[in-house]
Length: 638
Ligand code: ADP
Image (cartoon, rainbow, N blue to C red; front, side, top):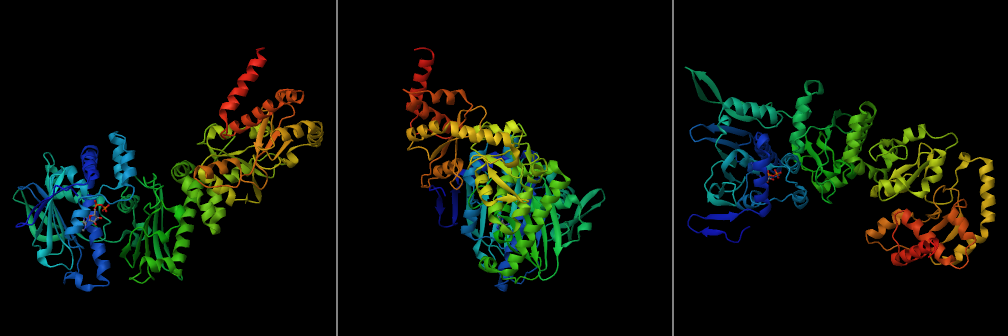
């Protein structure tokens, strides 16, 4: 809070400054969300609904909080003369400290990340703000002054708090009397927003965005009489006020499903797909789970929000129920409503509960099934999904042993058959187009797509037309170390161990290789001595067609890409030296056979360039450059 707060003892009035991020968000929102202005109502109603949910939940342990008013609802009214719109709930309310914190700062995780991603492009930022969750502050899109009066359930009636702000840098708070528990928010509309002062308009916005809110949203009935509109002293419920997921599938339109998604996810955009099932048997529960169209901005934060809400017999229990979904499906949004769990279930109980384990396994299977379906029936959509969430789903290969094969079936990987990383192949399709005699799935891991695609290790595969998977994401190392095979075909790194192409090579080729190994024995021995402290072994290879040399890791050693990743993340590693393989057909290698004087320099350059070609870093780049220059000068007769 601002330290320039002024305090007037008599009225208890205090002026405080917004946290800097709030000021920034307010400015952004007012300017970039203007064309989506109606969402302010959805956000305020959603907060009111959450407040009712929280009260019901707390009242499970303390029924006195109901203060003899247990009919939870949300009320809307407007005043054409005063040009105000009022949203009121009898939910949990807020104490003074809560008001200061909730309506003066942004407590969300990932706030810094959010601000760093803003581009200044209104369209893009509007989307991002939507994902971030605009919440209460969106009131300022349509209002130039907002006042809140609230009292927390259980507090005395003189412990009400009022909060008021014009959305500039400050707000004023004051203790007030408030008879009814809950929160009332009054919006003083900006110039040009008068169309919101109509019962018809407000009702249509509620039906559009808030129909699925569980609590009734009440408005005074209206009728036309003698050519003028009369507001009657009688309430009517504007929304359906019934848990959407508890209705039967056939009664719910796609539009309602989408509307509900926006409510649970706070996402502006449509979901990619959803699954809605009632599970019966030992565990009875309903699940309505969505795959979003876009990755949330905080997906890579350590404490990223989980989007599944837990209900028990329609009573809201908690948000972010991370035990309902495995970590690698953290992008899933939706609701699980259990019939069997006790109402007083806590996070600690959830962690231990066998029932929750069963629900989680069921939800996981459902989501994976939904993805399989999408992949089979709508590959275009699945590609979109993969682009947004593929990297996260890959984590599941190492995380979820029971579903490993299913997840492996969902992988889409870049390969040498395509020109861009976006054109991917499923493992099953890779197997389907394997060459005759091929019994392995070949892959290479590297830092970037180009480094992988142009790696010398691929030369013989290209020559023989064998497809190789190009794995360039960090998580891929984790994937391949946890996935030794798929459908009975082993996954094999092309940069590791001796290259055994099995039946992909004929007898003549094998004979020639044996002959080369003999013929070059003297040379490989000599290089071994020269590079003794840098290589484990030097040998002749048939993997190369164009390059003179390459490095490979020994069968049981860590591959070079993984070693680099671990080193970059600060881990201390046992040093395992690579094997240098040389191409017996290459002119440089043939030339080396007869080199005497400069042999050590040549050997060193051969090693260094092999290291560079696979994306490694030279220990002593300056010496490498010096040697290269000398060799160039010699060649030009210098
Ligand atoms: P979010 O809802 O995403 O947390 P908001 O800016 O909408 O963010 O609201 C901030 C917080 O203010 C809420 O988390 C809630 O604790 C509190 N709040 C907002 N509206 C109400 C309300 N009607 N009743 C009680 N608390 C509220």
